[in-house]
Length: 401
Ligand code: COA
Image 1: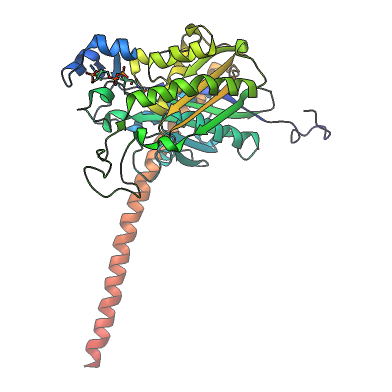
Image 2 (image 1 turned 120 degrees about the vertical axis):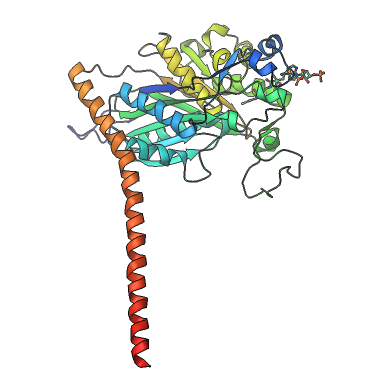
């Protein structure tokens, strides 16, 4: 939109462009054969029914926050920006480090992103699309300039490893993108978010919520702190909504399916992706698929698949992409993004920025240690001065005798 106020960009429309991306997965690989040593299953069944061959499992030292941090650092490096430039950090996750503080706040501290607000997004496997919507809308309304959106999960920590119909599906990992304001049309063009809470019990993680009765077994028979899933019902739901939701997001962006170069769907099951392709009457090859190597990483699956699509050269400047997430809630959502390449940078400038980023990460950790030390000394001093005051009071009382 042209501005009447020459020289000012205030009246220009603002768009939220993806300018950085990164992913992190644990090194440990668990194959289908490894799984058949834990539950009664086999490689053939898992591949035929899901398309999954292996998944990554977090080590004891890894967590949702550490994976999120690694993915975020890579995304910041691609975007070539400093953590202090971030205004908002959202971590979409179903496996947060704590109920509170948010995993996003932990990552914010580790990055040294001292000017960013931070919160977690709970929308299960649709979380990344929901978080992208929140961040891009904040940019489009000019409330912020730059956002870091992360999907990060350690599903292995909440899986019921005795339930063969769920434990074969999931894996751990994280993916992140940096969104930045620009007056160049493009970036996030549309998003459609939906929920059908009538199906809340089809896919759930009973935990310390307002309904938790501290029982190992919940009143509905589901195990606390372990994921419960009605697989066939989730399958039916997903095949019903995915195609419809993508079509809606594409239409809202003023495009047709022919304009979409690549669809990056939530990586739950190859049969769900095949069904979506049939529903949309398009070739399956237009969907990005990497679930064979990572399984379902819930909120992390779309950004991980996006990063690999970029790395494999499947995404070029000005391409239109569609993302589609679906899962617990039941919730689902789709969005259309116009891809823009990040600005070219001089090597010298990039090295300098990288050093400044590393300093910010070191200072983030140091800040936390200093804060702890400060609290320790403050407590000690308070105790001494309090003791001193009590002693003086006692002395006065003694003098009265
Ligand atoms: N290995 C071998 N057999 C298995 C098995 C496994 N890992 N899991 C289930 N089975 C068995 C069942 O016990 C059942 O046996 P039965 O007929 O003797 O009772 C049989 O396979 C068929 O079970 P069913 O649940 O109907 O299989 P399915 O074809 O629907 O596949 C899922 C099960 C979980 C793979 C499938 O329903 C699915 O992918 N659903 C969507 C789940 C999902 O994506 N969730 C996350 C969404 S974000």
